[in-house]
Image (cartoon, rainbow, N blue to C red; front, top):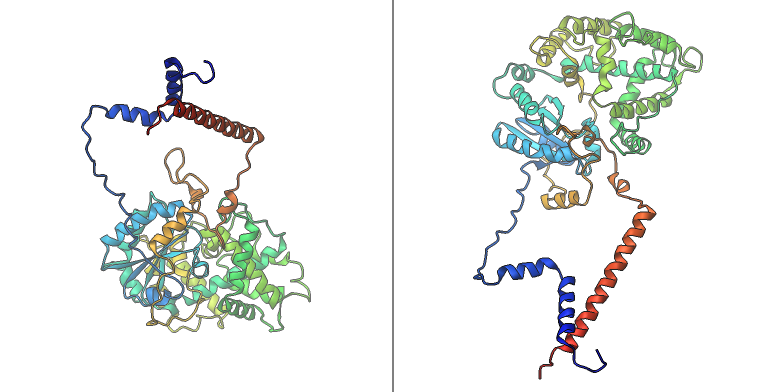
Length: 492
């Protein structure tokens, strides 16, 4: 049309159609749908606020009051904010908490806030629950998934609640009864660590501490925790003194031969394919000469072993169990345990626990308290018997004022929402729990590095083209609006 002429009906209608085609179609469709209908207001209920966790948070400051000072069975749930399986297990534990209210106390401990406490309690992976009895300490543990959390926890609650036979035996148990076995374990671990010096140190498995975590970085952080545990270091120095028969400050093969004979239940190592322990020790450079191994080297070696034990998880005590299981059938009978410990104490009467009065009787009672229905100790029951009784940690002061929890439920949820929950999808293609979600991390959340993404040049170019097209579309809409505004009559 000519400049200055009024817009024709055809031009005005074309501009209106173009504008509507560029507008959001959903809004126009919604408006057309409502024409001819009676308007009314629909009350929309606000989104329900998720119920707060019933599990009380505990930490290192409140541990003595919450666990050691509790008068009944205590169940502690160890979790990490980024562990997806932990989120699946928590509501199941909360239902069990309501079911067993008044009979058992349920607590939870956040690894990210309390890494040192998790180290002291020997938590290897997430989610994990520990069971503690008054004056006895930890009596069981279990690594959970969403599928098996309820049956595993319920089975252990049945063992340690009510008038169960195992509960009565545990209540009559004293710490001195298992002390010889704990000392036996410590010496076997020391000998195994020394024998490992004959081989080149193995590199840590890339997935030992969880998917996507640097083994070197996490090992270094854990090593710092172990080196900061003064009671543990003092215990290592005491073990060195027991191994050093001539007290000259150096361990040599002659010092270790007596200990090897004392701890071995059979003639050789029970692990298939391995040479006998003494033969492996003879292959360690320096042990068979005047140099030997001094105390500082021994302590450093045992600190390294502690880091490796965490990477191995529940398998860490297998060499000790195999030393007791002379016939290799996967179980230890009462007669096997008593004869091995008696031979051990006869050869090393100065070992801690060997001076206990009525030692065989007390040890037999301890065996019965942890044995299964077949009156045997399998590996899991053996771990329950000796693990967590090393005597580390600080003295408890029950009755100290309780400190407020480090974070509230809302802060905890906000923290989780800002982190990746898992390195896997939580479940696999068959709907089973994905074990890659159960990981042990030391230090800061390692998922920050996993969040970085590098886009391909083709993708960047496509996004740039889409952005330019959107800008051009917006400009076209603005031009159409300007023409329509000029064509409509002005209000006076």
